[in-house]
Image (cartoon, rainbow, N blue to C red; front, side, top):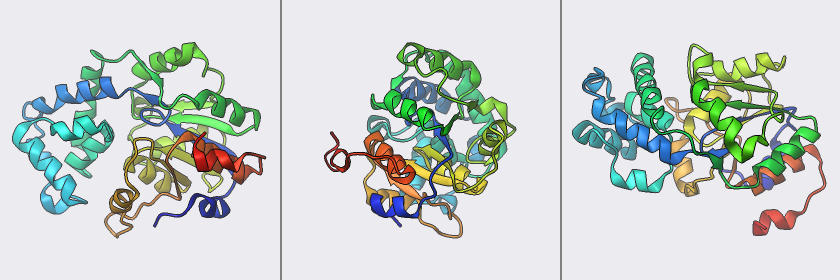
Length: 282
């Protein structure tokens, strides 16, 4: 499934719109996120969600099945999952509750109440985002943010990151509380495009770090760029995007860093750039 980056660039339609995920794509809020998840999982029984945990047969991978079994027995994440710092709360709830929208709604609500006790510190995920976002803005690419985070938290984080330097660079933001459904449902993507007075198409890109981001983009009919900033091995990425009837959604391109994304964007837009930066990560 995976393409080399230069092959992906030849296949992609140049973007007129680029939408970004927030957590673990543009910014790092992992500490607060995992603290809030730690608060929610022990409350699964009182939230009435034990019977909503998926069965082994409903899991995408054996690893997902082990995660669900561990949570069912211990009401917490395995320490190795927390130590790896690679999976978002949205993907955790997707693994635990599958297509049960009611259960996920309850879990996200409990997460929001817990997150209120932990959020505050936020920093760019890699450090070169502002330069990239400024360049895209100057190239007249419309920019947006899509996040399952509630606006109460997002607005504070957005104003705080790099002392507010990102304000004015984005044409729209859509938060988890702004639509009837959260990602992986396509409604947040379609809402962002509506705000921009744009129609879905392959010249609209969504950049995100999770399977839910890919599913939302593909169901909305736009291009999906998987941001592998946490360093998943590409063999594992092939595994979580199997392209089966049950799990059909696959990204159109994969980037391992913002250096790679910057190269991909510039290549597609025909902007002069230095290939050495891609090969050496300088």
